Image (cartoon, rainbow, N blue to C red; front, side):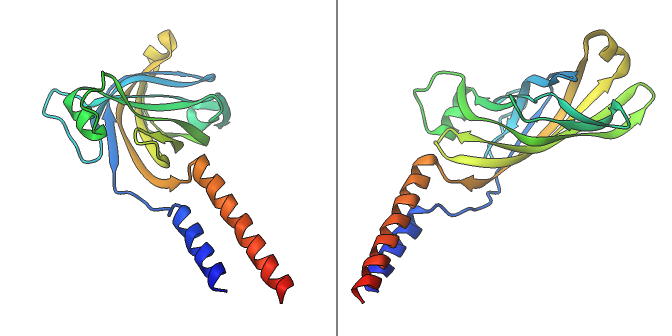
Length: 215
């Protein structure tokens, strides 16, 4: 039994503990393309990351994201809200300058420095926040999963507030990103860790079987 306890202890050490982080990443500005094929935002300014905020008129980097196609709408119109697919989506955060190097601890890295690379998990909610005349305020929200600069795989919840002027949208399908907030939090096991965990379970099964048949 002592041997079983030792093996169990080793497996527990190999299995990462899920823990919520307090780290909040924020972004603002950026152009947004909105069609039934998906929503695409490029170059939204990264304004904070892991508690680091740059001086006024400076940026930590940028946030870019894209969704899959529209899968359902409310009352038959994208203007009333709906749901987008996570298939083929992306959510990427890159850093620039001395602040990004401080975050990653890589003083020799060249700009831009990838801070997070991931994608959305379905469904992605498209919600009408307010509507006044031709002006609409939407919120895009959903879970994203991917890899941080340090190799850790994590999940996060993001909310992006998007302004759309209907008359402009009819010309170029463009809107603007007002602000975004992403709570990076739940750690998920890396593939290598999952393999070690599986190996540990096999070892436990072998020890238990040998003990049982020995008895």
